[in-house]
Image 1 (tube, helix red, strand yellow):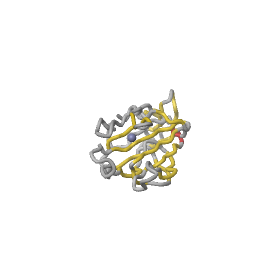
Image 2 (cartoon, rainbow, N blue to C red):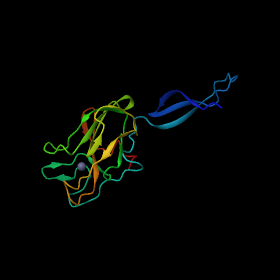
Image 3 (cartoon, rainbow, N blue to C red):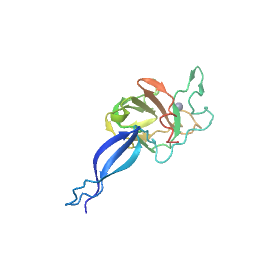
Image 4 (tube, rainbow, N blue to C red):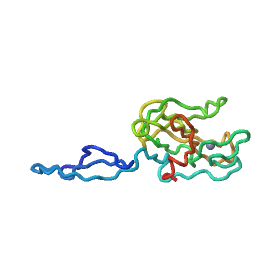
Length: 181
Ligand SMILES: [Zn+2]
């Protein structure tokens, strides 16, 4: 038996299709192909297994975009993640470097991913994640593990802080991640 295989891919109205050849058996000269919808072009994947849950209110505030942080506002979004939980890349991309959320605390780590292919306009920063510091990743591929924030903020809900940039401009992550919550 031959497995269906990916022959080629096309984009129609922003929807990414892979064209699968249904029956590659010898003697079939009709070359019948079927279109299978894979997902929206450049659609972000959740960074945790299953749906993402945004951090609710705790004694340190909330994790929603625009939430107050003293003199600055919170431009990212916080997604609940337990220490050592697996964290996945939301996009196909290159891990450019580690990213450090705090200049004065090198124990807290992060990852900067620059999109490639259909994600080329995007960059994503993931904070409180230890993992890759270079190399290619695929959307949905493992990039690291969540860190514990409890030693820094006792009582906080452990989470991964995400920031999203499109064409180098920071955007509200709820847009590209809308299907992940
Ligand atoms: Zn945050």
